[in-house]
Image (tube, rainbow, N blue to C red; front, side, top):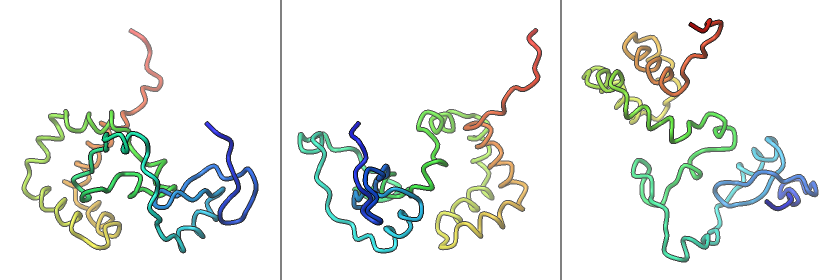
Length: 153
């Protein structure tokens, strides 16, 4: 890995440890990220060698062709990202599969997916016992509770 260069926003030398997922500009901090994001105009980035060699990554079908997670997630979202291995566990869960058969839960999830203001709708749905059960089930799969104070048998 190469040494960090200067920040494209404030110019601090050797401090730019982060890159904009849209245009690739380097920046050094959250304030610089926010400033950059306000004026970011995505520039076409050079294709990585593997894309030039014909090994193009598969697009994410949920967000249209040519869109990747890196394009969607911001720097602050990165810490909340669930690794693919744990997401795989969601698909393998019988308990979650059974919950998703409920037509009311299906309608709640469709409503969230189609909503403009997803965060306020999520807060409202967290008052619905079925949605809370769904959220708890997902969390227990991707973040199993720590086994604290358990004595070995």
